[in-house]
Every structure is written in structure tokens, then in C-alpha cells.
Amino acid sequence: MFAAADQDQARSTARDLLCRAGARGARVAVVYHADADGTSAAALACFAARALGAEVATATPDKGENVHSPAFGARVQATGAALAVVLDTGSRPGRPFAMPTLIVDHHRVDPAQAPEVEAFVSTFGGDPMTSTSALTYELLAPIAPVAPRAWLAALGLLGDLGDAARRHPLVAGAAREHGIGALREAVALVNAAGRSAAHDAGVALAALLEAERPADLARGGGEAAGRLRALRQEVADATRRAIRVPPRVHGRWAVIQLDEPYRIHGPVASAWTRRLADQIVLVANRGYVPGRVHFSVRSRRPLDLRAALSALLPDAGPDFAAGHDRATGGIVDAAVFDELLRRIQGEAAGEAAA
Image 1 (cartoon, helix red, strand yellow):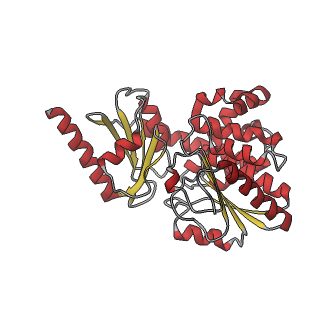
Image 2 (cartoon, rainbow, N blue to C red):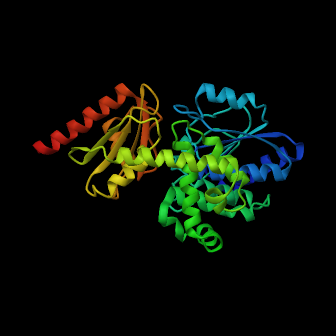
Image 3 (cartoon, rainbow, N blue to C red):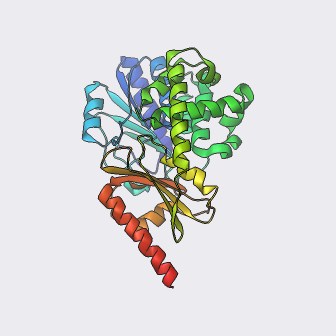
């Protein structure tokens, strides 16, 4: 079983699991988060597993699910896979699936809270200059011919880190070969699938598996690439509509409430931080999954946003204050979110009275 402190051993075990699955011709379930980073990592894992001789089944959680949801776990189990490769979905104690599992994830995690799986490849401290796609590429490069697909790792880096990722060697190399504009366009297209009202995440992975280079997503004639372009237009229209919703300012918090079937609360929060440099921007979406509130929190100030949320509502569950220190959020019942709003308002009232 995985030992949190020994990342060299974790990588060795992960490679051994993949090689043994390939040698047996076993089925590997590639499970991923439906954004540019997770989907790019999944494409790399699919290429590598097939090159090693394994069969591949892919899965990503539906709206309102995560990898620990019983219904999702049942679907993954039903693939008959001998090994699960779980990419960019976060981590928590325990194990998501009964089958042997390796997890690759770049989010910050306390080693004492690491998942109980056969191999957990992580930076633990949340390295600000990496992504799950980069970790996946580095894991796979010694055992599979993924070097021609290094641009996939660059997509994930750009998707998570934005322009700061241009300093990463994988992004710099891909930009020289393919152009930074083509990479950025590919990121936007891949993200659109997971943000769409239909949550048509599988089409983004299909498009990446078909593409020889990032420009194929924007200009290629394949069915998946064409569907991605249509989804991007839908998501762009919804985002423009949502950005016009005005915030309500409560002390250091600026709260925007949406009712959209699109997963656009993160981009809207990021956009508003450029206008509200002194506030913590919280964008909540009550329309993505009925009865649940999905929200994103961003700030231009160098704050630990996970800590700020947890201080307001310490016991809101594992899907609250997830992600990164500078880019966090949560998924909670509507009543829990209403309580969070009351506490934000209470904090602002206390500050005003001080």
C-alpha cells in the first residue's frame, strides 16, 4: 500500500501497475476531471495504456457527482477494469474504488490525509508551477511513447496556471512547435465541453485522442472537434450573460449569484477579480444542479482562500473549500450555502462595527 512520504516509490509502483496491466492485456479505467488539465492527462494515459497493450475504458463524473459518489463508483466497477487510473479529481482519505487504483493529482493535500491506494503521485504541497497533466506526462514518459504528445501536458498547464505556465519547459517547448495561440484555443475548446449544460465531457477527450496537434481542435474536420466548437460558442454566450450580473459587496467579499445550467462560475469569478482588486469574489451557481450550489472563489490578493472559507464554515464537508489556496470553491446543499452567506454578512457587519 502507498506510503505518502516516498514519491519515488509511488511513481515506481504506478509504472509497474501500468506495465503489468499492459502485459496482461487487461482493461484500465481512466477516470478524470472534465477540465483542460484532467482531460489532457486522461488523453496521455489513454495513449500510454494502449501503447503498453492494455484496453481502455474512460469515465468522468456527471453533474453533481464526484469520484466518491456511489453511482459513479458503480459505473467504474461495471467496466470490468483491472486497474483504475484517477486523474486530477482531488484526493481524500480512503479509496474511491475496490479495484487496484493509482491516483495522479497536483492539488495540495496533507500527507496524513492521503488516499489509501496502491500509488498516489502528488506534489502534496501543491506545487504552483505544475499540473496533473504535467505529472502524468513525467510519470508516463519513461515507459510509453508519449513524447510526441507533450503538447497535451502543455494544455493542462495553461488551463490551470494561465500565462504563468509559459515559464514551464513543457509549455515553452509546445509553444515553439505549435504556437501559443493554438494552445490557448485548444484549452478554451476542451474546457467548454465540461462547462456545457449537457456536460458533454467525453467529446473533449475524443477530440484530443483524434488530434495530431492542438490546431486540429480549432480547425480539424472531425466530428468531435466540430462539436467542441459548437459547445464553446454556447459557453461563451452564457459567460457573457453571467458577467453582466452585478455583485453584492459585503465587507471583503463580493458575492454574485447565478442561475445557469453551465459550469461557468469559475471563469466569471476570475473575470470579476480584474474589476474588484480588493475583494474576495465568490460566484455561486444555483442552476447547475437543482438543489445544490456550485461556487468558485477567487481574489487578486495573495490570500489563502481555502482558509478564509473554512474559518466561516468549518464543518461543511469534503466538497467545501476544495481545490487550491488561490482558486477554491465548493459544492453544497442550498441550505448550507445560505448559511455561508449569513456568515459572510455577519463578518462584514462585525468589521463595520469595529
